[in-house]
Length: 546
Image 1 (tube, rainbow, N blue to C red):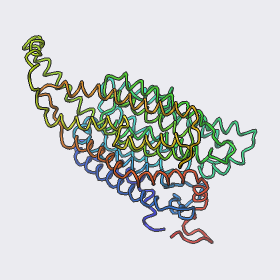
Image 2 (cartoon, rainbow, N blue to C red):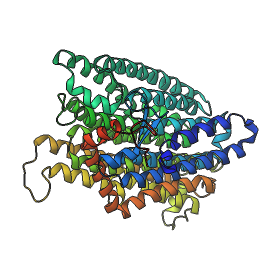
Image 3 (cartoon, rainbow, N blue to C red):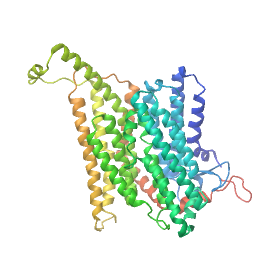
Image 4 (cartoon, rainbow, N blue to C red):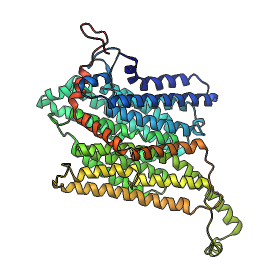
């Protein structure tokens, strides 16, 4: 086993060690803690990129075994197994890409608003990375709880009545989800006798008809736990208030948390209930109907939102609903486009949450100037008559930059060309309207047209809401109302938007990677053979792993 193989466990160990070490520093040493936390996040990003490149070279079960890490040198299904493949590597890179800008943004002022921010941030990364890497349901629960415990503290960071109220609701809902998780896992283990995902995929085929109903009941309860986290209607009423109340950098990293539920549902649906299994297609119609309902609810919420934070929160629901709909349709081409959409929408929403604080800072300043002006000069109607023939005023540079970023977020959320949001939706819609692929003229089922209409309508809703808010925020601004924005606050937003631009420019290679990921998810026997065939280091009668 070479050193590179140990990188698989590094995304878990690095934040664990860093978070624990940061607890030893006094809170007055926040600058030092911030530098250590940032160095840790950058190191995690580098490791994630290395694993991403490694996963892209995996081809076939023999090579895939190199992506299996046996903790404690115990073979599956008895030992703890970490697995890196194209999907998990993609989620690791996406998490690290959000973490670095969010932490930089927090260094401007938010990390001083409460205790142990940097430790909680690192523990959150540990939980996220562990959830994406683990190969068994028990440790998925462990990392799920680590992630949630850290998110409780981060959501409440900065205190305030609204934040505490939303935080308590968030904690109650997620504790209920954790309880459902345990019940579902217990039922599955009682029927199959295993929690290792690869082993579970093999044993499901041997479950008798008399116990299959109990197995599917356990899978359904487990699915509800993750659908709560993914934000599927009607289980999503907690999400917009919680994400709106969170501080900007926390909401920025929370953008990936709803995708944990999406990831697990996608993984288990194809691995355990994929084609050729006795319970093939289990729950897909629920995902399709629930996804469409979530898109509808999110689009209505986007149109109804007057506050930018709630607009962003409902945009998370639209993103989750679109992903759930794509999974429910169970088509390789749609899944490929959906994975591209997952990356693009997550980057966009994260940037938007951080941009909102900067924009609202300008609105607060504008409100103060307006109040002083009206108090000093009375009614503004007379001024309106004088300004009718005027040439307007020059927008301050800061507001211009914020306006450009706001417009980019609007284009991305609406799915308009030429940015990555359009590429993702175009890929999904093309696969829906041409299910057979190629030049085939196969008839399109009637419900597909409704799905296409709803996805386009959700984009139109985002465009209307963002245009309305942009006019109110930027076109109605007054001179002297430009907010004070620091470079380390603006840079993270620009960095995330640049990542979406890079997705657009490199759409071809990215789409090929997504297509390879979809094919790998469909070839479940490669995953199963890789995990069950992974060899212990130095085991008697076996060769040492290269």
